Length: 266
Length: 283
Ligand SMILES: Nc1ncnc2c1ncn2[C@@H]1O[C@H](COP(=O)(O)OP(=O)(O)OP(=O)(O)O)[C@@H](O)[C@H]1O
Ligand SMILES: [Mg+2]
Image 1: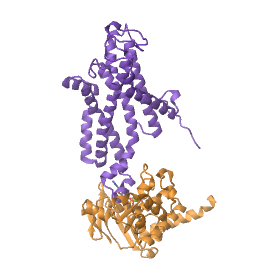
Image 2: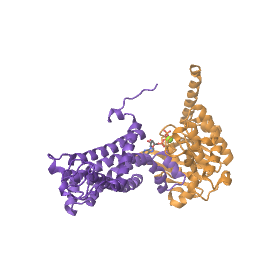
Image 3: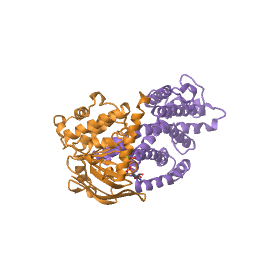
Image 4: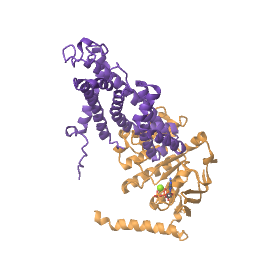
């Protein structure tokens, strides 16, 4: 479904992505891990057509994403949606949140997502159904972003992401701005939607446990290079790249530290 | 813990309560608007009729504020003059906003070359002092209210473009704009739906504060004889008319001066109040 063909991107003569290739099959979810600044978000932006690569191509359903003109790109984009990391910045502070959620549906009057069949004529009703789908009370429809918690905002961003019933949802660190218990809720929600809607995820994160939970395959980025790529079950295998092992070790240590320190908090 | 930050005291102490500030401004505003709209129908005398036998008469029941050097009713002239001073001001500010806002939205959003070129042009225009420009235009096209308005508009739109542009530039890279793009929204729709609401309050504050400034500009240029022409009752022109009689009949200048003072104060109070209320950064 999605083929990324050796793309490179340089910002101010500093390479952000270097010869990255990856493939996502329909219904499959891929995790991208790597430390801060390794180029994860840049990769996501290029795949969404928000940014152009310096070299290489992105093919989505047989179309070269970066050579398409406005109309064709718009048509393809319907299948490619996003959930951003920062739930506060991804919603317009001056709009009631339900308007942000149904905005994509206004742009694609011909698209009738399966879960919105009965209510497609009514924007407010569609927002209600979408809110329900992400586990939010309809009371929150008229709220503005600043009147909602981080978790609620992120659920709304997820609702907007699935509004058009896309094939691929790019999640750029969808939980890293949330606290731990809410992280788990949002991950469970994403997992459920993945199953219900047969969604593919490109799941960007530096939380290895989250990626493990969500994805079948994992790609490791380091300074713009894809240093490792493997099936999730092989995460702990001896043949992993040393950098992957380091990341795994660091995340384990962090977990242990949290556990060790638990008695301080209770 | 809730720490109360001391507020910088830019307004008189009795207006410290920001809502009070806006309320006072709004009450003034309503009075001014009503005066402007219905005043001309209820004035006791025709503002243009000269009555040489009653020059410089003291206040009386027929002439509430007395008469000027040509025997015209000062009160009537002030009320009718409000219409020209404020009407012109409103027209100027509206025109300036209508020109400045769309330009700011578009060049801020598109950016790049277009933006650079526009801002160069704007800097070029701003290098000319407003007053000198008004005088130059009056010199070329002749002194009249219309030409005065043209010269003000010519310079003022830039302030609006600047404010709008800088807001759009900070907003356009935010995630919600990217999300709207991914959701298939056109650039035009993003400008309308997402950029426009961000600029409304700053522009309203700017416009309210500008009303005061434009009134002063119009009045001072009319005072210099570059704006409203006699015998039209305009506050600045009235000041000018009263100048030769400053020593014998200072009220000829005091009344229009006070009128200008209070109206400018009202709009400034309202602008400051709105600015505080909406937390618009002054620039
Ligand atoms: N618009 C841009 N202009 C200039 N440099 C950029 C831009 N976007 C990203 N970069 C640079 O590219 C590199 C990769 O950035 P990217 O945002 O993709 O990292 P990331 O892996 O998503 O990091 P994080 O985990 O902190 O989100 C960084 O060095 C960053 O400074
Ligand atoms: Mg990132």
